[in-house]
Image (cartoon, rainbow over all chains, first blue to last red; front, side, top):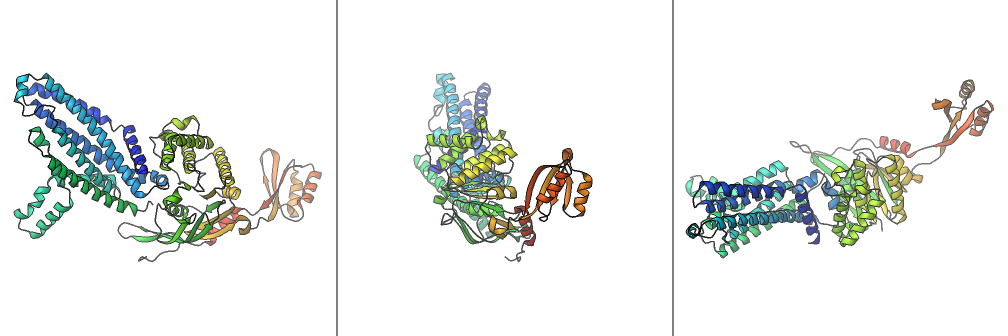
Length: 268
Length: 321
């Protein structure tokens, strides 16, 4: 665990020095400009739109970091040969890989936490600036704590995307890893459709393939409760708990696969 | 217990995308390196030196055979605590400073923060990295990176250190400093295993060497046992030499070859007989002055060239291997 921690901190240090956290400034500027513009253009709907936009932005910014850093995590070390000195130190290959993964998750947690703080600050400002009669018409306050449920599931989704990116980066180039990770993410969002595909097409083979993909590719739509929380619909804690269990099981399986591939690899 | 031991260590790679075929990178390497010695691992480019080092560091896995370091199989985490490794043309995280890099590696060995700082500072002093230690490594020259590479290989005060082309990228001053450092390591009881194609370094430093050519071991042993250091002639450097006298000396084969040097000096290759003192006395009598007299011996380079030439071509593997 100690070694994993040191590797993880080094990954975080790299992302800070490579100016990855600059995206937070872009996020804050985007959210503040949007809140101002939308406030000028709409009447009464602006808080709902900002809630929606903010959650979508956290998701997109996080996804960009998870995919674009995740795909290079292992590849860059091998390509630049910095892995040679590191693996000669007293560490196992799985510790190196898990350290890399944890480091990127740490970067994402800090990013999402800062974005969440900025998001709530903008919403609190909008709440303070809105007249009482308008506030009374909202189905939930602007700074609704239920939004955190959506953010928690976004974070879980990002952790799963990171694990998938790391898996691909253990054996393929960054370009291919980015393509494959994005493909899995997109297919994962249409997972429900794959399950029901058999009922709409006559070919049993196509239906079996779709069902196979349904079982292998994680169901990313399960992590998306943005619409429900923005419209103040209840998202039970039991759902959050089960989805978390589902997410962590998938992450564990993907990382085990990554460790198996990485442990057998020759670094020529 | 040997510091390093390999038995029939072999590595094949598959090369080619559409029609993969086996390529023999190392063929049945068997050798032992005793503790506390400086062992030179020599061979031309592509002979299999780096492949061997990668197998010893378990960066690649052998096709067959086995390797041990300090009596334990390679890859054992306990063994990794006791060794150091400098890869060929090392590259490090360029966003870190030299100090941070060494402290990071020291942390992986489990040293507490104060000890990490102490070790990093002492080693950077030892390899001659001064105020630059607080600059990001992306600003370092090749030679400075090589020095940092050597420092990181010693962060745990290793019992066995593996250096892949340690003199690469260093200027003459740097090479001398690293040679002295290797000798200091030996004096502390550390086993130094270094690969090189610069034979002068091996000749100066090594107690034993192994020579690899075309993936195979072609010679191994003590330098003194592998070839005789017998004198096979003399090199005499003189000034003020009369050219008629030189012509006469060449005619009666007292001088085999004469090379004109700068400022009117000559380097003369003399045979073993007659003794050089006689030829020298004759030359001095005609007004020449002695600059130097050096014996000509068989060098490691001569031996190396003979062994590599006799090694033949790289064995080909059947397509199904």
